Length: 387
Image (cartoon, rainbow, N blue to C red; front, side, top):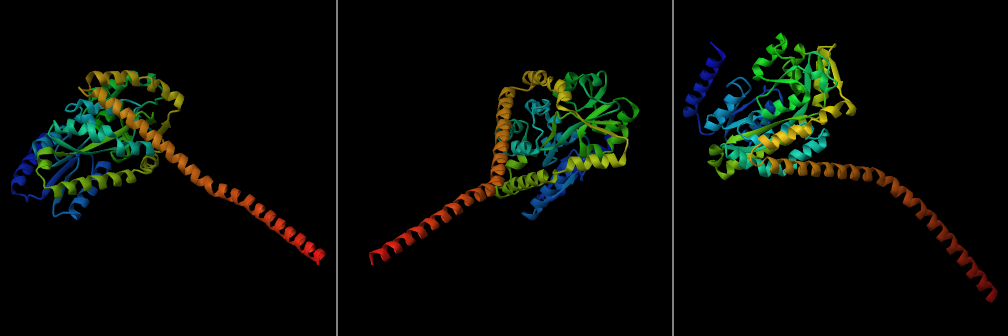
């Protein structure tokens, strides 16, 4: 039986089951395995829904119901109630979502990055109507980790990517980005990437460290390069007709579960990148892991302007508004991060300042006591003289 036949059978089973299942059974598919970041988020979402309602959430990890395009179609048609998919794939439906592939737009500082995703007006106000137009309710977006390149040859500059066939998602802007980097971008479904790397059909690909480790992509790569150019972003959505048909109480259950899982997945990522890289190094000691210096990154950074211009050309009617708002949101996140650091530094300095201010006060008190004693002595002498 072929993969497509298996997929068709799985979907048919879902459709038949949906007619028989209880109304409180919700189906949720995502692009990763159960123990990868999207799967961890999904498990927390399921836990929250089931703890706070009588509903059940069925989870379908990557491959269960097909590739990314398949699960998106199923979510739009209502076969699935929830779907988690990267803007890399939804870019065809929502061109503005491609903004997440402008290199060096998102910050490398994790606190600033998390602050942006929590507070962004672009994400929370501008994107939801765009998703709604495609029959989707945007519940949340979250980062999954710093994107890294895995290649057969070392990469220290764009010249090192010259003529390298680099696997990318089927997204016009990420194609543009790797063309600007000097590579030959080659769109491929994820299920074909390991074999393509193994046989040399492609010589490079990009993903967060946890995904490189869990999918064993390091087995068919010799070098990992941290160019700091992006952070993988994903979006959790509900079928809009399903969501709009929920009671206010159930909508609150869904919204609360999405928020709780969002907070949980950000905490989960603390230290995940370094832990994953350590596992890769342990499994393959001769793997070269290189963090590019700021000087080495500069030629890559210089390509961002061209990719940004391309985004404004192909990113849909609201491309400029989305980009402007994201930049404003990122600036606000950076400012908030700076203020938080300043407050922390001030808090650390406060005890020392208090101790310093106490010392003169003690000296002043001692001087005052001495003066009072002298005054009392003079008064006594005057009394004795008068007597």
